[in-house]
Image (cartoon, helix red, strand yellow):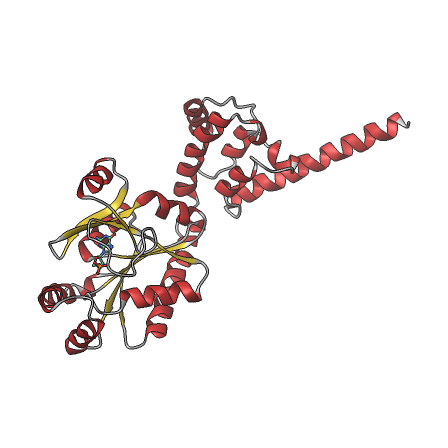
Length: 302
Ligand code: 5GP
């Protein structure tokens, strides 16, 4: 065996790894690598460049994160500075992940998906537009709301809504699990579960919410860079016709919805964008373009 040769190749490999690690750190610093994906990949990765990266070096490569922030994050998670990304114990990994998520949302907003909130009067075609977006654009997902109303025929649990009891809804509100919630048409409560939305945004997926106006206000307060798009009908008469044609509500309920619609139409120009639903594909594509433009804009934000 040629000992000298082995030693040489070993140190060559070590140098190579050090170089590769420096490249990863440079990518983190440039904001081109998703730190959350990198962190999660270390759990199962076989790549020594990733698994051998020290948590301290990893965190301090993040722009805006100085020595004090790193120390505090490590203290909170109970992790030693010398630990490596691949060498964390289960509880440490989970605790440090919370810190990484926090830093990711703060310093890598440009890598997160856009939150698009579609509002507009009942019967205007929000649901159809949302479905069109999902069917035609893989980088979009629809958030599933919780509601206290009963399922309609053909509606499935977890697909159209999470159908919950009033007391379960109270719990969701109490434990702050909803991004927003509201009484809609004065009869039932509807709300957006927050954690699934945030997780999808972290994965770079654009999330569509189809909610009422009060809910949009609440969501925008919590996530200010959300894009609220108001979808309007070509005319009020057309809205009346569409609602009657849909036939999912009785006459009394239709009247109630039209009254709410008049009120909502007055708010149209207060939102981030207004899209008139002449044609589903055209309206859907406009919303997709707005979402993509808002992500582009984040690339230039400090
Ligand atoms: P529907 O009972 O016809 O399924 O929905 C009635 C209205 O509830 C929809 O027009 C929609 O705007 C609103 N809605 C659905 N989900 C949510 C939600 O999670 N939050 C809020 N605030 N409104 C919702």
